[in-house]
Image: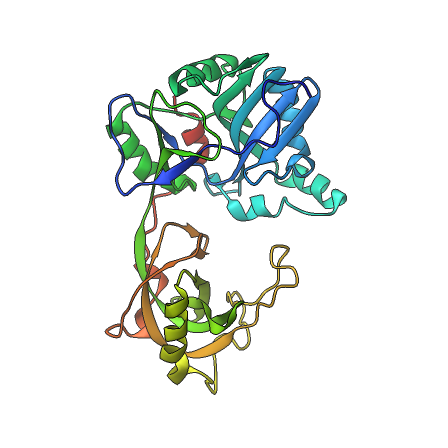
Length: 354
C-alpha cells in the first residue's frame, strides 16, 4: 500500500460539551452510533482500521467491496460503519447490537452475517487523496473535497449530512435520535486533522431515571464494589436488568460495600431464575468470554437516580452514571414508562438529508 499516510493512524476525537457550540464557521453533523473506522484504499488493497488501531477488514468483507466500487482509487477517508435494522412493519433504525455481532472469530459466521446484516458506510472526513496529504488543510477544504469525490455514491455508501446553521442542528439533535443516533458533532471550519486530539465537540443526549439496585459485582482489585446492577419494572411487575453503574472512586467503592450490607443475602430474588422474556444479568457473550459474570444479589429495595444518554432496546446503551440515592421512591414505581422515548424516525431519511 502506497499512500501519503498509512495505518495505524489514530483518529481525531471529540470532547463532550454541555451545550451546542455555535461560534461562527462551525459545521454540525450527526453523531453516528457505530464503529469509527479510517478506511485506506490503494487500488485493490483496502484496510479498515478501527479507532483502537485494530483491523476490521476481515469482519466486513462487504464493506471492502463497497470501497473498491465507490471510493476514490487512492484515498484515506474517516468513516463510521453502521448496521441498519430493517424489520417488516417498522422504521429502519441503527442497531448497535447487530453491529457487535459482526465481530466473530469464525470465517463462516462472518460470511453469513455479511449477507444477513450487511453494514453501511458513512463518510465524514478526507485525510488523503492520490498523493496529496490533506490532514494539515482546514476542515472546510477537506469537507468540500470529500463532497466532490463522493458526489456519485449510492447506498449503502453515504456522505454524512452537514449544516452550518445552529438552529437546524438543534432540530437534528431532537429529531435524529428517533433513528438511533446519539447526538451531534461540531467542527470548527479551520480545524486541521490531528490524530488523537480532541479538537471536535460532541453534544450528546443526557437524561436521568430512577432505577432499582438489585445486585452488585465486586471490583477486580479486591472486596469492594465494582458495579451496581440496575433494574426497571415492566407493566406486569417483572424486574428487568437494564444496565450497570460503575464509575466510582476507590474510597466510594468501599463506602458502597457498607451501604449495601443490610440488603444482602435475600431469601428470594427476582433474578434467581429468568422468566420468559426477562432480562437478567450474567449471560455470557463473545465480549465477556471467560469473565466472571456472577453477582451478589440484593433485596430490590434501594432506588438510585442515574444519568444515561440513550436506550438500546430495553436497556441502557452505555454505563449509567450514579447521581444520588432516592430513599423517597418506592422500588415498584421504577418502571419503563418513566423513560423519555424519542419519536421514531426512518434512518434512511437522515442519511438522505441534504
